[in-house]
Image (cartoon, rainbow, N blue to C red; front, side, top):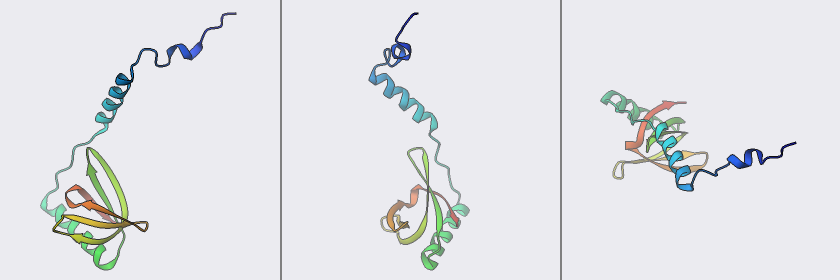
Length: 109
């Protein structure tokens, strides 16, 4: 009966760590998406929903875009800072800051 090393002989013997990192970076880059361009009507709708959440403490879902990836957060708007162009958003008792330019969509929950 022949006893060989099985899978062990094929595990990473031919890939250097730099190659593995490069392959991972290529996979990550292929999953990136372009930032959508918002027209004035969409921007106005975002503003209305954010202000409703601020005034009436209503939960909303904010979708942000950063470096090619979308992130969804659900919570309540705490403050809107027009000087720093950011929103303080309360998610599960935790306050996070979201740049207004990163927001791609807002939905009422």
